[in-house]
Length: 183
Image (cartoon, rainbow, N blue to C red):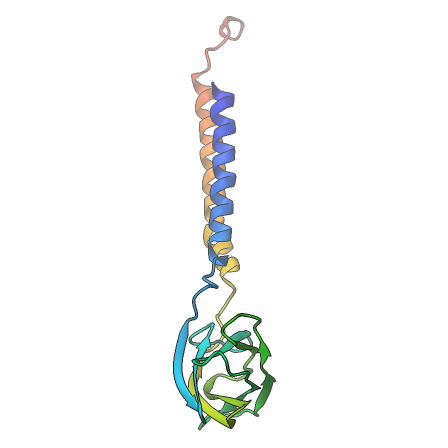
């Protein structure tokens, strides 16, 4: 019975440890964090950001979806520093996403915290157009989530070891003494 409980406890601890360590890596990739509808010249488009707010040096996707999917658009995204932000323009080409909506996608990485403008420049059958979306880029986190969980959960290992030693010590006290030791 003791071996069955011991095996069950070990498997439970491994399962709980994996659950805790992997919980921070879950993300909802199917839904954008922010979507704005803007006019870029003659084109009405939805501009979606995969992170809102985006963080310094973390790549995020900018997706452009035209309301009229029959229009074949091309263009680029220019990330431009806003007032009070020390940075340079970062141009990135928009690539076709390959869906039936005529979506375009670009992966952008902003190197400086502060106010930025995401400028979408489009070319299509009705001529060029551009639209601007303001964003505020946040500071990077103090530490990665996996490291924070590791540090926070480390006392649990010591508590488990202490409980195990207390259990073994109690069993040794309750074990019946042999008659030879009494003589």
